[in-house]
Length: 583
Image (cartoon, rainbow, N blue to C red):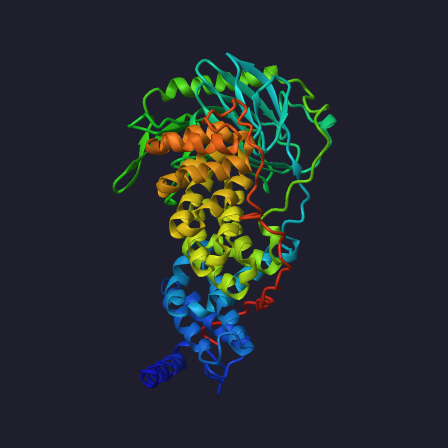
C-alpha cells in the first residue's frame, strides 16, 4: 500500500510539474521543485492574481509541490510552504482565506501550523508589531459601583462564593453574582463608564471586568463621550433581563453578554437583553435603542441588530430561529432609553474616588502561552472554528504540558467551542482532564456547568475531581456546576454535593437545593450526607451552610503554569513581488 501511495504521489508531482511549465512563470531552467522560495512565491502569486477564482485549487497544488521537498518540519518544506502562503495572502481578501485554505488543509494537515504561522507573521508586519507585543497592556480588576438597590434584599455572591445582601454604594468586581426577586431592581455603574440596570427575577453574573489604569479625576461618568481606557467585560444572564448603556469603547476593548442561546458583542450601545426560559416564542430577545449589536448563537450563526430593531432567538430542531421585532419590543426599547437617561442622571461625576486600591488582573489565557503559540492561535481564530480546533490539536501534540492553557485560549477566543476543545484535548490527554476542566471554565465561566458535565460524562472515574476543579475556579456558579454534573452521574449526586460544598462552604445550602432539584430521588441522601459532613447527623444543614472545609486535597487544583516550551519560530513572510504575467 505504501509503495502504491508513493507511486501515486510521484505521478501527481510529475503532472503538476508538467502543468507548471505553462502555468508558473519561472525563469528559464527553473522548475517548481528547484525554485527558490522567493521565485515560488512570485510565480504562484502571478497565477493566483490572474485567476483568483481558482485560488483554492492553485494553492493546494502549490502546497503539494512544497510538501514533496522533504519532511513537513524540514526547513526546506517550511520555507516553500511559507512562500506559497505569502503569495496566496497577497492576492485574495482576508474574507476569502478560509475557503481558499480548506481544501489544502484537508489534504495536507501536517502543513497547517506552518501556513497559519506565516499568516500570523504577515498580519503582525502589517500592524507594525511582532507577536511578542501581544497582551502587554497591564490591566487591573475593574470596579463596579452599586448605585441603587430597590424593592427588597437582593442576593449577592462574591468571587469566593460568600453570600450576602447587596448594598447601595458597594464596590464589586468580577466573579460576582446578583439575583433579584420580584419587584427588585439593581442599578450599576462600571469603571469604564457603562451603566446597567438588572430587572426583577434576574440571575446576573460579572464573569470578567478588567480595566487599564487611568486617572479618574479627568473622567465624567454622567456624560461620557467614550470609555477612559481599554477594558475587557464579559457578563452573563442565566435568566431575566438587563438594560444597558455602554460608553463608546476603545478599539482594543471587548464587551460581551452571554445568554443560554448565544452572546452579544457590544461596541457602544444602548440595548436590552432578556433570557426567559418560559417564553416559548423567544427564550432570548435583544433590542437596540441606539447603536448596534452583533449576536452570535452557540452554533456560530450571527445576526446584527441596529437602532430601533429587535429580534427574538429560539431553538428549533433544524437550528436557531430569529424572529424580527418580537412582541413588546417597542415598549422595551423605549424603557431602555429612559433607563439609560435615569442611570446617567443618578451617577455622580466621580463615583470611584473611594474605590478599593487597584488589584492587578490575573494573567489572560493568551499570556500563559509562548508568544508564538498565542499569535498562531489568534490567527487561526480569524480563519474559523474548524481551523482553530485543528491548530490547537497540533499545538497540544507538540507541547502536551501546555494542554490546559492552550484549551483555555481556544475557549477564550471562541467561547462557542469551549466544550468541544475541552472534550478533544481531554480525550488526547485524559490524565490532565481535571486541569483542562478548570482552565477552560475559568476562561468562559458561563460555560462551566456544560464543561463540567461533558467532561464528567467523558470520564466517569474523574467525576468528583472535575466537580472540585471547576467549583474552585467559579465559586459563584458552584450550585449550577453541582446540578449539571449530578445529572450525568445521578448515582453520585450525594458525593458530588459533598465535595463541592466542602470545597466552597459558603455555597452549601444552594448546592444542596440545586442538586436535590436536579435529582429528586436523591434528595434525602444529599441532605443526610451534607448534614453528616457538617456535624449534623440528623441531616439539618445550618442556614449559613457552615460546613468545615475538609478540602479533599489538591484534586483538580490548577497548578502553576509550567515552564513554556517555545513554539517553532514562525518563518518570516516573503515580500510579494510577482512578475508581470507577460514577462
